[in-house]
Image 1 (cartoon, helix red, strand yellow):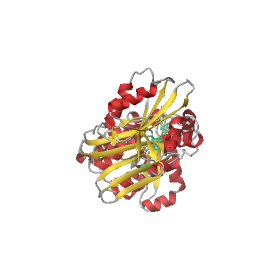
Image 2: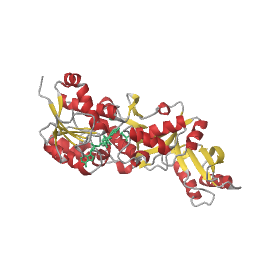
Image 3: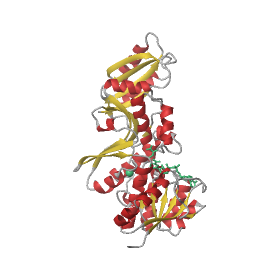
Image 4: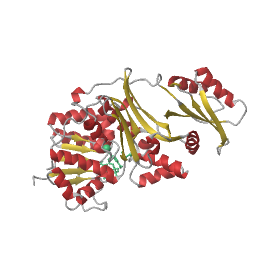
Length: 428
Ligand SMILES: NC(=O)C1=CN([C@@H]2O[C@H](COP(=O)(O)OP(=O)(O)OC[C@H]3O[C@@H](n4cnc5c(N)ncnc54)[C@H](O)[C@@H]3O)[C@@H](O)[C@H]2O)C=CC1
Ligand SMILES: N[C@@H](CC=O)C(=O)O
Ligand code: NA
């Protein structure tokens, strides 16, 4: 059999530990498929003494993580995380030394993907990142290779396992947000800083990578309008269910004459839509191609095994010599997309207000909607929260988003409103 592919591995946490386990457990099978063995030769992490449940004594330990870039290895696997700092230093050094790089680091790719892709192409190295988007689901391969013949009109989906785990637990068990977040962290789904998950930043990182693959544009994370699920109440989930919807954090990227529109936002998803049935840490991505039609990729979006599976799949491609430009086309051919404004987009909206329990409040909200040109389809007022506020939930008829924004602006500062209104888009 040919010479082994030698791997230098940075980061031995959830995913790094998983990679060692996958390579150990499926060693023979992987070697047959790759045409040669894949062997970890050197490792680095923050704490050498930590028990990770795997035998590390067979690997060289490197204290200076960035020095792994020059280790006697063919590939550097970066599983540290963080957009900048040691992960970026390592990737830059490895690529400029002609080492292949495999990473699960969507934050780094969203911010520096174009630069790293150009560096990889310049040195003839691979830069592969299947694990960075939707964990174990082969969606990078699916878009970059499987759908390469198509013009893509839209790509959207559930891109954060932690949020989907929280939402589906809140929905099924009526549990509190904070309690479920702690469980997602214990299961290894959450980012080192979980606000990246619950504020939609992680999904925005992933969406910017998917949009680049779908539309041939440079990753444009700064253009993604992102919000998360932090302010969602159990009552929103109950109201959504009463209306025939489930709440999901959905990322949407769409290119049209106005430019590239990218948004991550909590949506009400109709019960009969495939995304409404995606539960737990599962992710799902829909891509609409002009010849292939609608593709749906679904599977485990986070966690040790599925994410490590994607990292090792990239290593197998490299061992086979199967790689090309990291994104949909050479880095120099990726275009800059103008950000399309959201205001002219049309849709239906769910708006929820916590209001003072007094006469005239409903009339005030209804007047703001009327004056801004928003047509109300349904309005539900329900019992009091612990602080005595009453919840008012509205679903609008289809109309331009700028009208909804104008209505909320009219209500800004109103003494009748307690806290910020919640605005979710409907995905029908
Ligand atoms: N956990 C998951 O389900 C998924 C994680 N990812 C990504 O994979 C990467 C790793 O994630 P996890 O394994 O979950 O993180 P983790 O926190 O479990 O592990 C991180 C590892 O990096 C090491 N590390 C951190 N800072 C370091 C530094 N300055 N120098 C040297 N080593 C350092 C830590 O010691 C640890 O071994 C991140 O980019 C994450 O976004 C991607 C998909 C899924
Ligand atoms: N924190 C991420 C991990 C995978 O990318 C998530 O929850 O999806
Ligand atoms: Na993936």
